[in-house]
Image 1 (tube, rainbow, N blue to C red):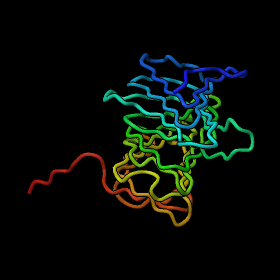
Image 2: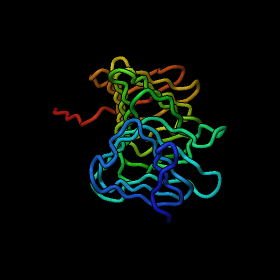
Image 3: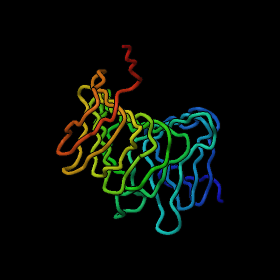
Length: 224
């Protein structure tokens, strides 16, 4: 695999390359773009990093992968997906995997149309100025292994795929955040908390669809 390089826009390029970050905040720049070519791998190795955007330049070959190969959790703070090539589809050719949490933040409008396998937390951060974050799960988009799905501030998640989240996911919504599920779509999760208040098991309407909450967190003991 080739080494790390830069283009004329000073964007980090990974073209058939492997990048390992072993120090926290080696990348800590919300204006920086990381661009991955086909068959590229970014391994966070248990660290926390922050970038502005992920771009792809893959017209052939396999998808790029962002992962964490260590047992220690890793977290990537990022903005939106964007295409390196003008005229390309907005659907990212990048997969997230491993013990990895992802925080979408900044003024973003980004789409997921692949099944992501990352087994950490998923957060859409709409707190603070310029934080009108929107994450859209299209018909093939999912983050089924996410443990906690959190939407902060004025953040928003839209869902067109009933399998967007796994049945063990805990969904946490801030008072001013939004969750919109498409008509005819039912998403089953473990728990739902809105504005810090946990909701009982049942079906809840969000947009034109349904969030089915299977049970509250914890357990209940009955003594007779």
